[in-house]
Length: 297
Image (cartoon, rainbow, N blue to C red; front, side):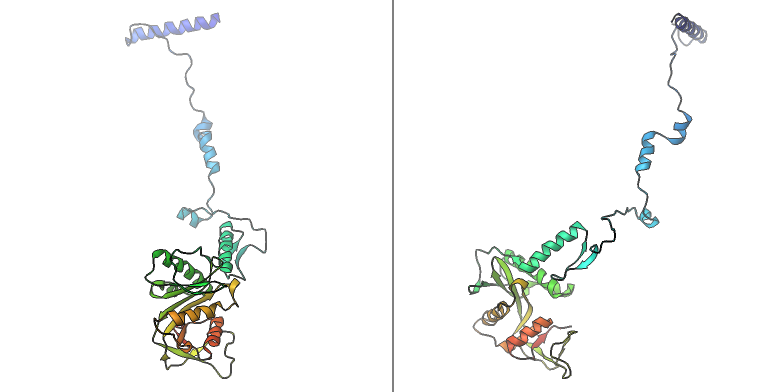
């Protein structure tokens, strides 16, 4: 300790002498004995430890293209060779979704239930009921009805278009130009028919060497039009409520209420691009194999 004190005093004398000689200060001052050490070679070369940790945490680019685009690939689920993973089509609702992806599976469950049970319909205060029975009631929605009514019809149309496989162009057809008949049962929309005013239709003709309705499904129409009064643009019944006469009930309502003061003859109904089941129903309802068709591919 005495040695350290002598060294400190010596350093102080040296500093005082140096300052006195240089003339920078008049009073003696002490030079600090301990100073901050210069950065080591390792830190100069490698940088700080925090920067090294940041570099280790930085994920590597999945590919050169992803690095250029600034995107990083993330693994959404683990594939151990399961047969249930990947794109699949539901055999009931025909929806294509990805198994193993939570969002897709949730969307499929939601649509599957909607497909089987129909669109939820708690009811309106003002309903234009044109038919009522023990099975349910038929509500007519006109193009001049409130936005709430038209919005519900639009949600039903989206479900119908998906099942019927309508293209985007046909799906864009506004329901505001049609009359919509909704069959409501158990607080659900169990069936729907959308009708529009037309003037003519073309009868379906069949090949004599083929059954009337065979697979693959195709049909031809005559080049000579025949008079028609109402066009059935869309016709759909929920799978849970099929084989109960709902489609026939809806068509009866169309014939009686579409044109005021007139009941349309069955053979003056024309159908837009019918499916095999739709064409079979139309033939049974109209009583002829030469069903009138309009707007087909």
